[in-house]
Length: 174
Length: 153
Image (tube, rainbow over all chains, first blue to last red; front, side):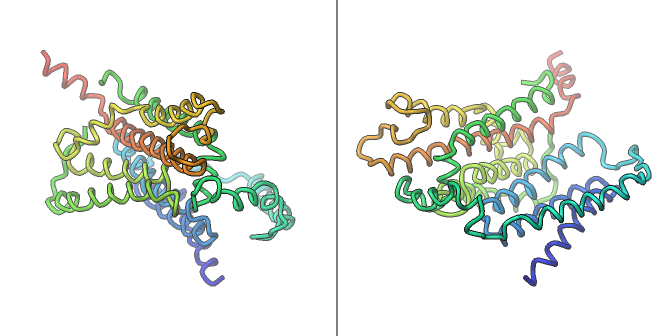
């Protein structure tokens, strides 16, 4: 409990800083530290696989891609002028936040065994995955065996992203 | 294209860090069934190590030969993933139902284990190739084509 509040403050501060900083390279690095703080939150919630992906992709690979993009374009945000915030947003966004908080009151508690998420199909996975697949990590068993169609389509999406980048950026190359 | 880095510190550190990163990526990939990790993360770590080689030593150096060669492997990982699914079809079952993966000498649970391992390697190959490919595409400069044309002429 003591670590959650500083982590949340760090998360909000890095998210705001990434948007407010004018130097784009600093913005990219602040975004990387935001991803790292988010991965700490995932690890705190027990989702170690998600934390691993967030740390490696968000803080590592995405930062490198952003930096390479900045080297191709421009490093300073001189052109974009931020317009003054309209009154509708100042009044409307806190009301939206209140609405979300009101809705969050009805969510099941964290780790509730009788919530819909933990009664529908996840007990089956937890009980049978080791016997059926010899895979102690249930997340891998679900991703690669029970839900392998989803993972297959995701792999196609990644492949398409690589092909599209090569087609757009490597003009006239090999 | 990216030029090799000038600093001796960076270059000698690269010789130490890149093999460790590749070993760690392979470990995460293979150990994904017993701990956190798996094909996606392992592939990203391997891709990051090869991007590091490109950024430190340049694309044309001998130290980034693996990164240059892997660019020709677009779609091999997807082929491995789909190929395992096709083998399940040939074995008489549904697409990606590893119970019908006909590997002699294995019971049904071990067939699922082998299927998960093979598809994870497929995902890792796909992710690693895509990561390196995007990094090379982003560092591709437009005047390079004209330089090549000048060389030809």
